[in-house]
Length: 439
Ligand SMILES: *[C@@H]1O[C@H](CO)[C@@H](O)[C@H](O)[C@H]1NC(C)=O
Ligand SMILES: *[C@@H]1O[C@H](CO)[C@@H](O)[C@H](O)[C@H]1NC(C)=O
Ligand SMILES: *[C@@H]1O[C@H](CO)[C@@H](O)[C@H](O)[C@H]1NC(C)=O
Ligand SMILES: *[C@@H]1O[C@H](CO)[C@@H](O)[C@H](O)[C@H]1NC(C)=O
Ligand SMILES: *[C@@H]1O[C@H](CO)[C@@H](O)[C@H](O)[C@H]1NC(C)=O
Ligand SMILES: *[C@@H]1O[C@H](CO)[C@@H](O)[C@H](O)[C@H]1NC(C)=O
Ligand SMILES: *[C@@H]1O[C@H](CO)[C@@H](O)[C@H](O)[C@H]1NC(C)=O
Image (tube, rainbow, N blue to C red; front, side, top):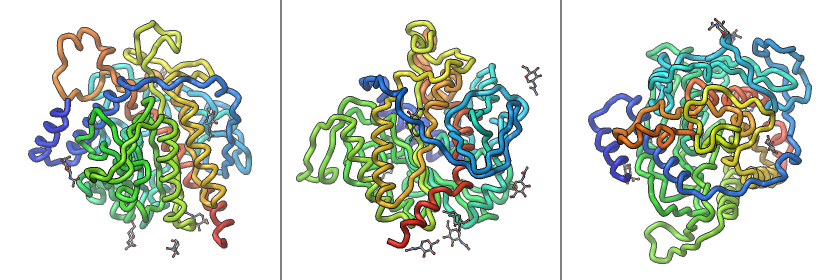
């Protein structure tokens, strides 16, 4: 399988458009994630998830999206944007057309890859107590003037970055936008030159350093994590104005090999550490870095919660042995939660973020897990670029190669970005930080 990535790298020389670059990079990442999650042991599903209190998001008054349900004034009202339901809305959605987005990734372009049922593009997220503000690309670009918005994480986060680029790029004339790559392709930069604004993506699937840090060639069988080292990555986003992190799927193993010392150093110490503890160590390194380096009067920080997978149809009363393949409708059951999402890991994130808050830095969790759980039909499944010809065996059994991890675009990650948009404009982290600035 390693030669797959090498082929991709080799062919990079002859392909020139950035579109191809993104496609190639995403290819490697897709393979990596599928490989590791298939091999991973499933962490046990905690029983007491239901009793965890949901945090509420206090929303400022923002122009509400057109809504078929009752529209409650959102001004100074407590509203949990992450609790709600999906409403079919083919008038407002999709927010952009797949084939009109210049920077679309072939890994996520399901319509281009022969998907015929397109309802997955047309669902609106309707929070129970209020409406999401309508996404306005011009307003966001103005907000980002002279600023950097940087997504940092794995291929799910990359999908959200592609979504954001697609959401804003139609508002920019062709000669005033560009795409480039830096730092050996670890950093991808979309630039809106009229605004001097960039929307960037940095590949760091485990946030801290690991032997999977190469943005293309990262499919290593034996994953090694330097849980105490983040500087090599962080220096590339240290002056960002808005940071959006994620890290989940690459941790789905029962234990991780942790390295103290550097790669290749004879003094390095390797230890197998149970996964939740290794995850916590890495997130603590991440939060220590933020505490010291983030300028509280400048930077807003977000963490996107786990992105659910749909690999076991029996969990949503589908047929045993099936997965997301050929699904066409969301799950209607309120509170549905599959075994692909580990509440224990969510609690690790919450606890690290709470401790950071106590130390004066607010990080907003974009709690997209529950709302995405419902969307079993919104994954690429077999409708994406395949990087090797399919075998006869695979063709005969589509579920064997269906991608039930990533998300088609337009689709679910657009809603994650609408939630991010709502929080960027509310500027809530700022207020907490102002309070502690004097310390
Ligand atoms: C996120 O949502 C889940 C359930 O939807 C909840 O259990 C969890 O506490 C929430 N986390 C935060 C930080 O809001
Ligand atoms: C929206 O969906 C309804 C019901 O499925 C259909 O009758 C209508 O033609 C659709 N409208 C558009 C613009 O696709
Ligand atoms: C979008 O935002 C811009 C800039 O703030 C504003 O001029 C425009 O009216 C907004 N568009 C809509 C449809 O609200
Ligand atoms: C352009 O934006 C960058 C941040 O991305 C900033 O450092 C720089 O000063 C800006 N340039 C101008 C001319 O404002
Ligand atoms: C740059 O990327 C190539 C191909 O992915 C990789 O082989 C090489 O080791 C990387 N170089 C550095 C300095 O990271
Ligand atoms: C933090 O950011 C503010 C606003 O951009 C700036 O005025 C200030 O100089 C920065 N502080 C430091 C220590 O860089
Ligand atoms: C938050 O809002 C305040 C006041 O509107 C503004 O001065 C500040 O720059 C904003 N903070 C960020 C991080 O954009």
